Length: 326
Image (cartoon, rainbow, N blue to C red; front, side, top):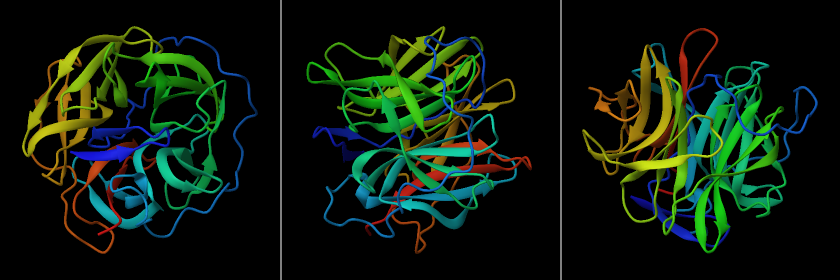
């Protein structure tokens, strides 16, 4: 496990789980997003860093980079050698209603702000990106938000879950809604635990039930929340994902046939692996490796934080995190 620091000045023990979504839109969500103009071609708010920030805390996003891998079948991925951003971690990716790819992540240096969530937008299937700071209307912690986790909002638009302080010295998961993928209106606290700190959510739907997995600040056991609608989640219990390489962090849920595939990682295993479920509670470790680590000039030490989206040609694109400071 690694330690990561958010701008609110609180450190937590976490394997930096990227959020995830099922990539599907179903059900009805709570609260309506503030109307915004239809998505159009956009220009970048900032230029992403070109190298790691070696002055940043040891496990901050400043020490990592987000790379890309592709797969024809969604099972065996190969790295592309392309980097979305240096000083970046915890990606989640989705295709919006206009067909764009939106890759949310936690960045260290993001123009005029730092160590908070941002979005990279691609209109050409991940070949090029523009970079936008998020506009968070009604959110009360300034820019102190990380670990973005995006889903299709039931009823239209996008819903973004973020880790932040929720008062009383506690961390939790809040959410906001958007119709353009950049401007989000606060919806409320989505998940919290009395006396503990759920962080780094991964949200997906199995059947008619929404599931949210989060890390906590103490160990590798994940909190497991459920909800009929993805606005306020109830703690179901804890979940320990055990497979090849040890205990895994579930990072991104992706629809697969009649069930769901959960892309995961375990340190020091270094590879991206996966689990499947038909009900969201019983998980089976899949054989094989989804993305096998091999050291290159870009890929260093290990892989973590996978997030996957289907491309128009039927292939799959994975955003993943590797160290940028070694």
